[in-house]
Image 1: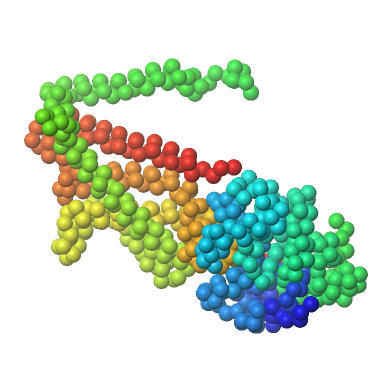
Image 2: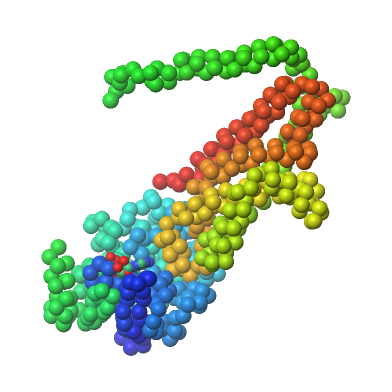
Length: 247
Length: 270
Ligand SMILES: Nc1ncnc2c1ncn2[C@@H]1O[C@H](COP(=O)(O)OP(=O)(O)OP(=O)(O)O)[C@@H](O)[C@H]1O
Ligand SMILES: [Mg+2]
């Protein structure tokens, strides 16, 4: 694996009013690396990965994406977002557009590709997420698992260099979680750099190169999965694991 | 519960079709009767036979629109152009208000409070007697601007509510694929809010058509002015005002039916 860093966060902090959502967070993600972030609710996991594509602006510290420091400037952030795909817990598909239109609107309007080019890419990724036959449907006509796979394909159509996932399976019915995780595992096998917030520990064991455990706005532990799951360095992580593995 | 088993309430009896239609006819008949006898008692001289020629005529050249139809056309043109302008103004004000800029919000709120708190008639006088001479506006332009500005206030609120009804996740998804704010509005947010905005916007068109009658005070030659002119020539106030009212009613009813057809098309398929 190449050791070139793609996301470098150095001591970043973020407050909402008086509330400190992130305190002194440092994390490096290398190209091709798969990082799984976990931790209790409210620990700042979403806030952290939303900083990585500028959906939240960090107040302090430095954040570099692929060598470019992130600063608050609309065109700069827009440029960056083209290279950083994001998948949301609630899918956030565009309900007034068909599946295919959901996939091609970014490449056409933002990357300025022709419709034909955009459609070729879109059909390729629909194939990849195993729903080529749903291209003409509206999101509301699909199951939750299918919608989330469309959302993954939509992000991939922008040909990003990093993919961020914020609890991609948390709002799915249990029987649909597998189909989404399978797609993500395959994506990992293609060598995509991924930062995934999830409590799916089976998935984490399978693909993670690095486990990140957060609590009250801080990173408490960064370990390789072998040690994280068998012998976590922090007592907090151990308690957390005991809790979620019980279920 | 099966219909047959429900107790017979007064409401249900009144809602059976036969009784509802009979009652409706009775009420309308009563209103007509009262106004007719009232007019008789005043010694009013009904001249309904005079009315059709103000609507249309058939001459050697074929169909000719009468004064009332010409006035109706002027009302339609005035309403359409004012409404188009009001939409633009309303959208502008709504976007300013949602821009997140303090200045934008200040300007928008100031504008809204100003428009909301002065009577339409005074606004019309402002445009015609004050801004008119200053900027060289004719009565038609002054009338159009007045209606547009007045209705842009409510329209901007309709836009704002429609835009705010789109979940924030849609903005984030649009942003996450690199869209600018303008692109997100254009491709993602506005198309979704139209469905929500359409019913109140129709209401606003009907409202505008009705309030357009007020421009007759500066003698813009629309439906109401035409009606007044005919009456001052013929003294047929009952016939002409009834006719003018009916024409407004037909216009707004057609519009409402048309729009509910359009609305059905905008319902998302599921
Ligand atoms: N826009 C906001 N305004 C105010 N507070 C916020 C905002 N976004 C997040 N927070 C707060 O910041 C803290 C961290 O939130 P965050 O969503 O990052 O947690 P999380 O680890 O993703 O939790 P969860 O597992 O519930 O998704 C929470 O206490 C939350 O209430
Ligand atoms: Mg979260």
